[in-house]
Amino acid sequence: MADNVENLESVIATLDERLQNIDRQAQALNDSVVQSREAARGIKDFAARVIDHVHENDDLELANKTLIDALLEINRYSANRPVAILHNKFLLTGRRDAYSECRSICQEVLDNEKSSDDDVAGAFERIMTRLDDEGNFPPRQFGDRPEKLREIRRVQEELEAEDILEEDI
Image 1 (cartoon, rainbow, N blue to C red):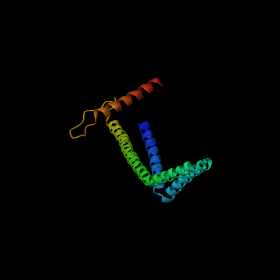
Image 2 (image 1 turned 90 degrees about the vertical axis):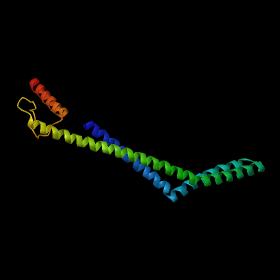
Image 3 (image 1 turned 135 degrees about the horizontal axis):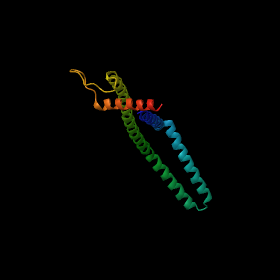
Image 4 (image 1 turned 180 degrees about the vertical axis):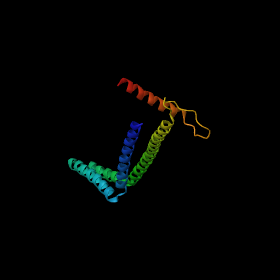
């Protein structure tokens, strides 16, 4: 049971890290300064490549065609950029929702695992107090709460295992 708890805690920590990463990415998408720098850098690099290509070309007609094509590409890029940003926002929102759902499920399982550990420990103590000297569980009295047979057998197995260890020593 302890391994399950450790594994679940590890998974929850990983999900928390991924959620923080998604939040940082979403913040960058919402930051207009970051988006402007990114767009400016892309256009600047593209313009530098086009200028190099035009300078290498001696044909005026081909250079004009290259410039017109470059301007059309910049126009297309500037028109599609907001759509691409919105698409990325939707993807990040979907990932965030999925990770949040996974995290809540893991947290619920972890809470159940911890509470079941507490229940087992409580049942163990309750059963131990009621066992007779030989390790048998006496029949319950009228009005007593019945113990789960599985819990009684688990306690008896643990006692038998302790007896075997004591005999070996």
